[in-house]
Image 1 (cartoon, rainbow, N blue to C red):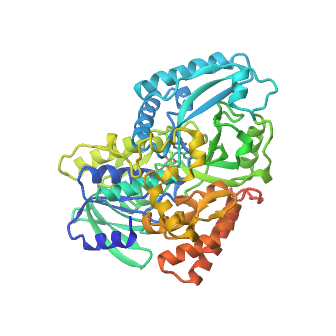
Image 2: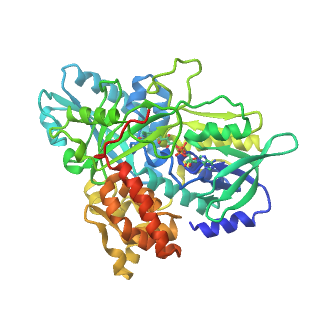
Image 3: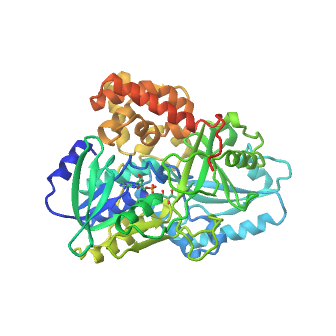
Length: 538
Ligand SMILES: Cc1cc2nc3c(=O)[nH]c(=O)nc-3n(C[C@H](O)[C@H](O)[C@H](O)COP(=O)(O)OP(=O)(O)OC[C@H]3O[C@@H](n4cnc5c(N)ncnc54)[C@H](O)[C@@H]3O)c2cc1C
């Protein structure tokens, strides 16, 4: 995946595209893979970097959603469980089975959650991961050696999926490119163009790196811009009523020692009636999340002080060593593109549906919003089916159910389902690309060094990100190609100068560029550094 080559492909196209996708998050990437693999001519334009929006900020679960089962949304849970199974088959380098324990402190919790989780197993059918079962106190302690023991009676274990969201996103973009799609980051859509009847027939975009403005004609334009979808809809219909009710969720990342072992904790009912997870992720402990309604979309939402306190307090009820503010290595925040409930009283976003919605407005703009990372493939299939009808495209079946995602490596060769192996081999998430990174490190010893003692990220990953994964800035390399910023903001800041130097050399930029990148990145890293007092921005 090479940006210069993508720009050449864009400029060379004289025919209209079958589909132009606006937005390079999970939804847009899924659509690009689906449409290109059906043989359609596809252009995807992303305003910032791929995954800069919500899709790098999830809780990293590929799940049916136990909570949605409790809300009675059986069809969403079944669909998500099926997608979970397919994703594990198609991307075993990026998705793995993770055991979760619901710890029980009251007598009624064991039978209650035991039965609920059996239903969860049943709904998964042939796509099931491991079976749920009730654990004795002893077994619970073996699974969760750092759980608070006071009053603990036992637990219920069940299985779900876990992934690295930004890495899956990059792998999807590479898959789309391999299938023939043209995908471009740092290319905002500024306007929509119309035919003589007022129907949308393309977009006006800009290559942010050169300022080159272009018109891309299209049979169908798909708006897959997540929390920004209402803004793009207003380009088509300035008076369009908002569809979205944005809500933010925060995550705190700590050292692995807070949750030793390889089992996650699922708290089914927090004091505000939500679910909280403490999860082992890339050798760290990730805790989240919250559900706080907010006024509107933004790229770098800040955690409210109260949200941080809430997560710390709730985690302290379940962990024998209560995490403190100064233990936070990174705080990252995402905004959910939730679809407003018709006529529902505003306020609580946690009860809004996680189903996706497809809306075609009177100008022919197709908007897809909502859903979850887990269901991105199904959302894409649905959107492309509708786009094909709308744009009168040649019939072509969806083939993504069995389409392997870039980097696929048979689990026997790359045993990412084995936790110890995952911890031993941090390059495992690259799948087949890991060998290219190792070759780089072997040929150039200066690329082999770890960039910070606290994170197993080597220079070769930065070089590979620039050469093959369209990383254009230091943030792209440290937040989404590697996950440094999301795991440990201080370590990410520490590795910034060395990483910027490598990147500048690859991209043909000078030292002033590198210095500027470091300065911008350090300001961002300070925001992810949870020990800083973050004043609430109401
Ligand atoms: C806190 C939190 C936790 C979550 N946890 C999970 C989980 O564990 N599992 C799960 O399955 N789901 C989870 N989700 C949901 C999941 O992350 C989202 O549903 C998904 O990432 C949305 O993807 P998207 O592509 O629709 O939006 P985004 O990822 O936001 O992508 C939209 C893109 O459009 C681009 N864009 C906007 N305007 C323009 C323009 N004019 N031109 C070009 N590009 C433009 C933006 O830059 C952005 O990159 C979570 C969500 C949140 C907020």
